[in-house]
Length: 326
Image (cartoon, rainbow, N blue to C red; front, side):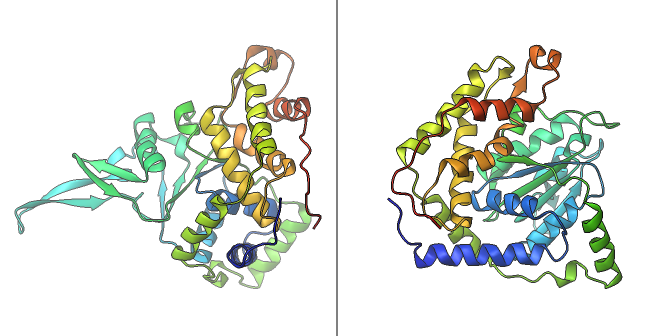
């Protein structure tokens, strides 16, 4: 079933390890978050970082843009940010006697939408077409976004002053929802030490070109997935739809997102095929923001992570024949 990695697959693995190494220069103690963000990028998805301010979300996005040689823009979402700030607008030029398109903040390779849940729903929805279709329409004219195109959005935990929840239709556009969290005491001491030694974002070097990233995505998409694993993914999704504590289960878009994430995971683990472990590794990151718990879950003091762990435990893990031990 599994073959030795091809030369192209080895190159993707090596380039990925270089990117992780560069980002770790400025993001200390958050290796798993770095890896999962990179997995999401290789899978062709957008990332939602839900966390408190000041834990390094912006630094992570900027470090990734440098390591991946991507144009980068950041927009701080506030109540007064307009949809045209995101999408751009047309303006009449007297000199040319024509209307010209002025790019919005989202017209870049890597767009950091900071505190996206602090702006209006109308501005939030302006990202929908861009994230889903990779293009934006302004005054009847459609403009293609740069390739690759990646959105990293951050939001404050629900309950923070001045925030409002993203609609389910927009949450589903993000391939994963991740959290960085506070650093450990040891890692925070190391962070302060690096600041004293003047280790800054300028130390991050470009190790991958945009063209290489686009090629890496194509190679990841070709990773082999057996029928047993495909069925396992669908059974997990179906279990969320029938779970007694879940009001809204995983959508078909969610199962596709899970499939893409598992392919990227397998390659970064040095395999050219997907295993059930790859599925379980990313399942909760892919599913957590796509499901809605019911009142029964709240009455039993169950959170999303606990319910999804129960879903994983309830579905039989398939046996894959002829696996290669690494």
